[in-house]
Image 1 (cartoon, rainbow, N blue to C red):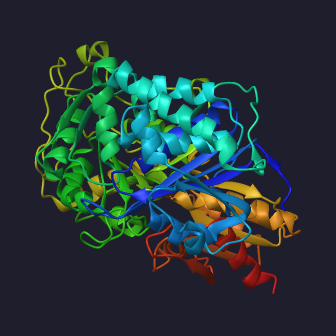
Image 2: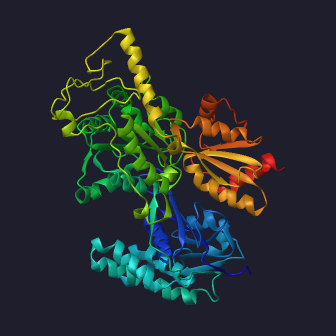
Image 3: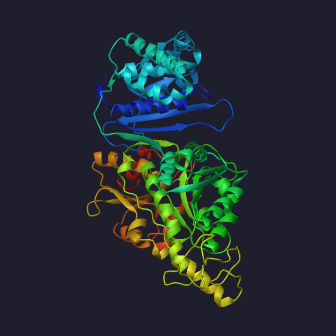
Length: 585
């Protein structure tokens, strides 16, 4: 039998849509975090209105982690299909918890003699506790019981999470979980290989990319949100709506994405920090308004969570294929900032940066997420400890405007950034339209003015500090590494775990993670690539879009590219294997 492991576990929960897989998975993950562990949680589900196989994957460890690695120790099967599909993914000595009244042939289906089959009458036990619908709570309690977790942890979490549903619902779920917790002690005749022990640790939070983006936007002072829901960005709208009274935010669910983009343009013109969120299909509808933001130099923030395209594509699966689209969206030429955070912590930090940059250089900022990042949760240290500085750029105060004469909204300045005022300020009357214009905003078709305005707008991005947009480096040091692995966006999370796997085998690999696609950190990226004879890039698209951007901006062409475009995120083992195959024989 395998050796026992303390405070390290991989778990998968599977079942049909509507069986509470995601709710149960998030609750289980938070219970593990309450034990003082670092946790990763991510879900997988098809785009079906009813039915379909859903899963929630969890990894917990006593040290920081960013992705699921290795086989599963525990499988919570809420239906027979879960046993059929995932029994082979269990490690030796792992266990399957299932409803023994509904799955009579679990042993035959699993066809594994090296794992434990923990059958319990989950639905029957739930009915006794108050309702069959709570069979997932029984399974969750049983899982915690197998790992010898303190039941008070799940009791406290259920009271906190379901308090809004009333004490009767809370008590029934606690009773169901307790029944599973107690029954698990006799369901398995020997001690399970995984044991979870409490670790005292400073308070942490468990957030996915969308939640962290919302937290960052609120911290940055966002006061207006207009959005039409579109998976996988929809939870941004829901979360913002849930906090609008707490933070004085106006949240509007618009009739479509066109209205959303135009409304935030108007709100930003009026002086408030404004944002919207969407996916690639919705962003397609926002493109005309994006051009208006560009030519009118209006600071707006757009969160674009990528999913598989084109058109409807695979609505609930992930991809990194919108990079070139957002870089070139809308006709003509104008600057825009494109940020691709790599994990939930970066979502929080870059959301704040996005609002600051938007107002500093007076242009739209696009924060490029994806389904994997939007819906993958990590344990984060206390976000309150991160210093936040609000930068509003050249937004003029009432005192400054009182002294203004012949105010020129689009005045030519050395850095290309003009003074900005809001409607109602004294001496601030000016024209703001979608037409090319002179310094006052009045329409101009003069060729020299056209050239001057294009150059003025382009120059603004130079004001963004290079240290802010610089890529981050991970793994082996520059002077000791053999290989440079390049990635961008959410691929950072599995890349960090791949570096650990490679280091365990003595492979010295350094990773460069690119967050800013515009403005592009050309000098830093070129310098890193020049230092390595061996390099490879990992991207979630079929055309190596970041590789093309790197070549365009630096002249360096990365010969080797490992691309994944099946709608699923990279796995750490997959990245490590690709690097070993290409460079270590």
